[in-house]
Length: 160
Ligand code: MD6
Ligand code: FE
Image (cartoon, rainbow, N blue to C red; front, side, top):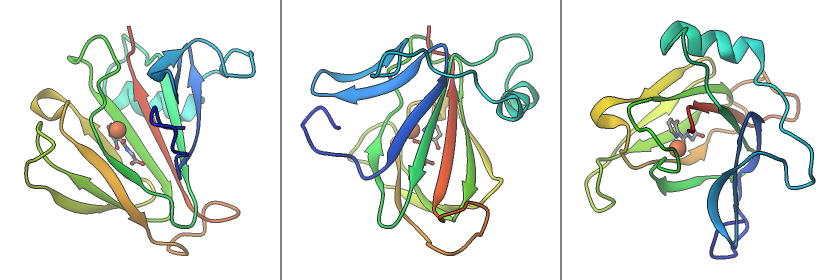
């Protein structure tokens, strides 16, 4: 649920020390799933990508898992609920193609788009750490990786 009470079209869960969570109380990181249990460990295969592309000294605190099915989309946003923006956010795309829109650090700026395909890794870091970005739509049926179809996106972050 967005802070404004609108259901999101993307289904979400998390792994790691923290999960990213949103409801009427706002966007935040939580140590527990809303049903009470701790989040599961970040999958080893995802951690391996982080260690290869970001750091083998500091593991991420959170792996947010986004599932896009049908007409699910994600509006333009910044990832800014973390404490230290000197750490990048690493995203891994799996399944159907997703149209990634990316702009600058002001919402009003111009944007460009690129199709993210299964297996793509993307880093937001440095000057690009706080750029606005979102997913306009997926291309259903473009990849047969996931049973039931759709697109999975993993984003790993250092939270605190
Ligand atoms: C997505 N990705 O690809 C949504 N955030 O489904 C993000 O919101 C994102 O790709 C931070 C860094 C990279 C990303
Ligand atoms: Fe994001």
